[in-house]
Length: 443
View 1 (cartoon, rainbow, N blue to C red):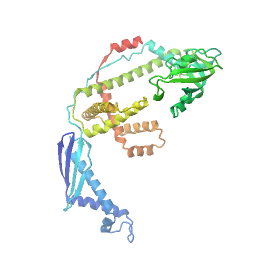
View 2: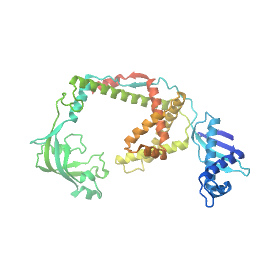
View 3: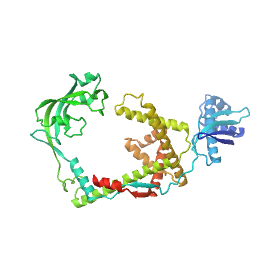
């Protein structure tokens, strides 16, 4: 097999190959023989039909398989002859069979960019201390107590910190809100038995304050000017009236912090033992958070370390996906006018994509140099975790689904990337940030 590869600009290369006629004929004969063994042709017993009949009957299928298998052989041989060639995409090939029976193959490859990998061991990072103070433990215990608070019905006026249970409907300019906007408004159309947590930073600023002093059985109208960050953009700046009927006032009762509070979560443990467990959990949480922060800083420093040419087709494809996510986030935030922001978001997406791709290629090169790979056992565990996350009940069918969707290589790459970052984090030069420690202490 004769193979020629010539590198071009923009992370591309041309691949041209010629497969000798005898090799083509041998492979075609093998394919035809595989058809002969199971073909059912009228007038012939299974496996007894002449090869000439098989070739005529299954000509299109045999030719298609022949081209596919020859193309695979060309790609495999190209990589064997050029071990330093790192191909991202073999492209759409042009193939032909010459008059003398040779097979010719030509395609434009997308290849991994050439770059000099910067020093990746001992990257300097700065994180907060992962020490756990007594105050940290007390805060965690208080949070647990708050989460287990009960709300008991009381016979008094509502105050901030209570829960007021109400029935309500809303109007805008004297019309039901849905009619005023000409479309459904979900929650704002009204609710029965709705719990309002009386807090200043509530979902609907002004509603809690308007309920202060209310008692069970009261009815009242509470007018609110809809704030700028409200999900329904059509209502921003308008006066929204809540027509409220108060059903109950409930007082928040926080349980005492003792071993009884933890009887279900940590049965049979004393408070000292409970505090030790909480301290260990907080330590693990801080270590995990610091490792994530280290990985983020390492990625940022690698992205800043060098700049190199990237495959433009890959940049365009990936930046399009990033742009779609940014547009979706903007819509979720209530943005309606996109004429003025699409170009800005597109440029942001391209910049973000270029940085991400540079880091990706550098991490993959580190994996190659450090011989980092993923075992079958690690892949199996990752797929099982993914199956649990997606609530798949049949693992075999789930694996087939992943294969069909082309997600298996992505899972493997994700695991490799994670292992590379773990290596870089372990070898990073870590400085404990005093500023972060002081901030944490102040809080």
